[in-house]
Amino acid sequence: MRGLLAPLERKNGWTVAEEAGHSGPDRIQRLLNRIDWDADEVLDDVRAYVVEHLSDPGGVLIVDDTGFLKKGVRSAGVQRQYSGTAGRTENCQVGVFLAYSSGLGRTLIDRALYLPRSWTDDRERCRAAGIGDKVEFATKVELARAMVRRAIDDRIPFRWVTADAGYGYSKGWRYESEQADVFHVVATTRHDTVVTWRAMDHRLHDLVADLPRQKWKRRSCGDGAHGLRIYDRARIEVRPWHRPDRRHWVLARRSITDPAKIAYYIAYAPADATLNDLIAVAGARWAIEECSRARRVSAAWTTTRSAATRAGTGTSLSPWPPTPTSLSCGPSSSKGGRTYSNARPDTPHRPRDPPADHVSHPACPPQHRPRPALVPMAPPTPTSGPDQPLQETRPQPKS
Image (cartoon, rainbow, N blue to C red; front, side, top):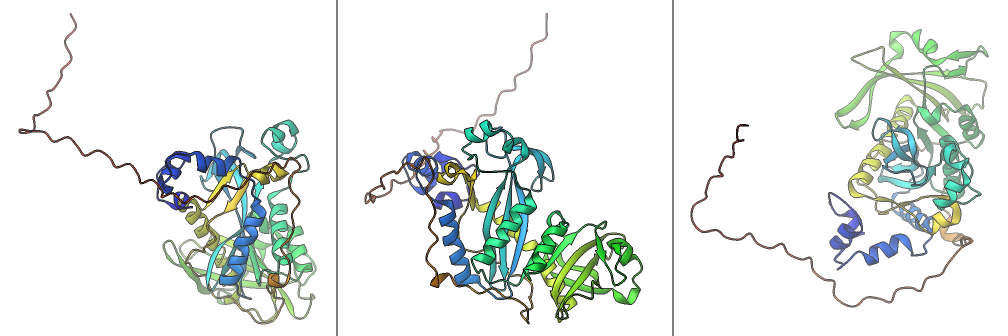
């Protein structure tokens, strides 16, 4: 852990071992390559820590994906695909992440590796990378839906879900969230359609284009990298014949400097939710960007081949450290509606089946010898006399 969190320019078995005070990389490499450990149980410990220290009935679950640039072709799930980290199509892996944000802080609590069809359709390639035959293709939206369902099953206390347009555009996911009575404010595209009081499908940018000027309110959803994120905001109610205590909204965010730039959101919320409530949830999505930035800086996430890989889950993306980043999210409403309380202390730890090719390794006995110190660099050799200028070497003319 000390090695992974150290501000090292390059991190490999040797540099991490040296930073941890080891005389060689053997112990680090054994941890990454041969130790049997369950990544899901480690994740359970992290989530329990988050619930204990950050839980809030008004918490927000945030879905997003990020890429891990790779040079080779053997890492699980790697291919040329779009990477949000690089901002272009690159050879990379893509992980889908779930973050938890509350007034007490924010951190990542779940992960899933995206396996493209080029992998799941090639079982020999999957087996060579340690991916089990039972692992099938799943879209990023399906991975996100599964993670939110796990958060509900584990009784993580939250009130809202938010995601970018890559996930919010899925009508199937939005419908499933409504059926589970999960409040959400998710981004979508201007070409998405909604049903209005006229029982007709309308594209979002057509609805917003006819809004009068007084419908737009200038609001901020909190601080960003360049100061307050201030935009003109407006909301339009749609599908008014739904439950009387629930509302559907289209939320629009318009740039102040360029009114032609408008972002769109679909919201399912309690009837008493205000415009500021929806803005706060939509703005909380940037918390996962901060978590990803902290992960890249501190190497808080590692990709290794572990027991989870041999169990058939592909590359293990294991969350370390469990301590949250010290960033606060925007205000969240906690009035009415469904909330999820933590009941894990009353439930036993979920047993997990061992991998089919499970090989037990004896535990290492405790090490009581002192850690070797880092080897100091030799001091520069002193020179006598004044510094001599370098002689200029000129090329000889050709004969």
